[in-house]
Amino acid sequence: MNSIKMKNTIFIVTTFLLASPFTFAGKMTMPTDAPASYEAECASCHMAYPPALLSQQSWKNMMSSLSKHFGTDASVDPKTQTELTNWLVKNATTRQKYSETAPENRITKTSWFIRKHDEVRPEVWKRASIKSPANCGACHIDAANGVFSEKNIKIPAK
Image 1 (cartoon, helix red, strand yellow):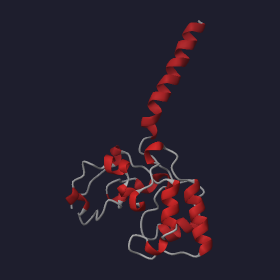
Image 2 (image 1 turned 180 degrees about the vertical axis):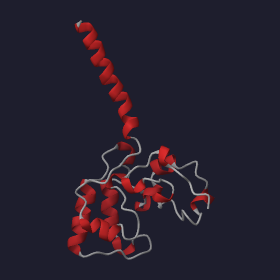
Image 3 (image 1 turned 180 degrees about the horizontal axis):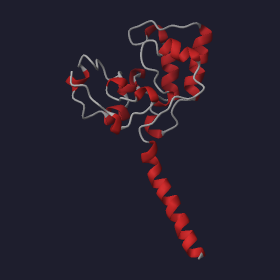
Image 4 (image 1 turned 120 degrees about the horizontal axis):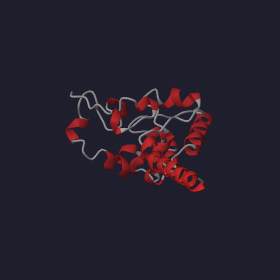
C-alpha cells in the first residue's frame, strides 16, 4: 500500500513540475503594487509593460534617460522618477531568458523577443493597425492583462 501511495505522489509531483512551465508560459501579470504614477506617466503613451520584461539594468538605464525616451521627452519630477525606478527595478525579471541588458533599452531588441517573433515578416510590423513591434496589444489580444501566450495571438490583416 505504501508503495502505491509513493508512486502516486511521485506521479503527481512530476506531472505538476513538467506541466507548470507550460501553464505559466506567456503570462506576465502586472504586480499588484504598481504605483499610480506608472499608469499615469507610462501608460498614457504606451501599454503599461510588465516590469518582468526587462532586467534591472535595462530599467535603470531607461529611467535615467527619460529626457530622450524613444524620441520623446518623458521626464517626470524627481520624486516620481525615484518611485517608478525603485518599483521597476524591484519587479524586474529574475528569469534568465529575460535578464540580458536590452540593447537601446528596447524590449523589442532583446534576443528573446527577436527569437519569439522571428516568424513575423518586417512588412507586418508596418501595418497601420500594428505600427511597430512595441505595440504588443495589436496582436496579443490579452496583452493588457500580461498574457503573451501564442494561443492569444491575432495578427491584424491590415
